[in-house]
Length: 362
Image 1: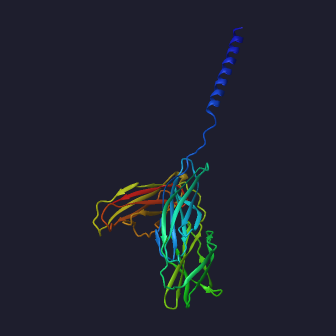
Image 2: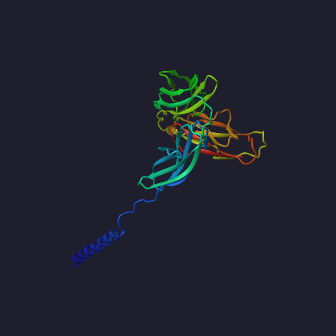
């Protein structure tokens, strides 16, 4: 009899607990949806002033969200009533970039442009703000250099293997053109390539740029500019846009681990015109059978007072076997008084160990 009573009591208690839980869940209601819009901390348009010929303007915006940023758009409003909108792409965490080709301004008055950033997060929350502006000067009056009209780059995005890009330009002069060509300049540094343009019609010209294969690890970009000269030496230039050769597929992630000898270094006070040197050790830690070869690039971002010994702006590419060590020379040669700072970024080809860096001050 006692056992029956105990069992009945347990059933009553269990039913009471389930009832209390149901009431709590009903009071709590559905989980609140994320409703905070993205935060647009700032942005820039560089350069802020262009000649009447127009040109490329580099756009940037700093956008963050407490969940995730879904899409960031740039909207360009012109004082001439023009409007252009396109997507910006994330280059580093929270930083989005793009390029706007400002058209030539053949009117007497300057044209002002404003840059509005529009951002959506993954819950479709929206925010927008104007972050920067730039101007295109009015054309000089009573001056008749050659004109450059419609232009085309096709295709302007190529696979890592590279390939042919067809360049078409409309140009002319009220007297006669003496030269018409385009220059193709790699954004990452290096010499320009000149491509001759041949007439296909009265004022239409065409040429071919042979984009080389991209060895990586990053996408290769080329700026394309048209140059026209008439028979009395007057010149016109126009930016045609950018050709991008995508990066090759990233290699498999190596099990190797890079170890830095230091994460920061402060150079002693240095007189202008003098130089100080420091060596940074980079080691590929041995991990027994799990060790692996690690390749990457070291480059300096920041003050030009700092440089990697014997390296160009693209930095130093390296490959380390397990247990191997690299001594990376760093020079500090200030040309202006005051504090300087920069960062040595270590970027692995396989994308491993993101954020590996050394802070420099002097």
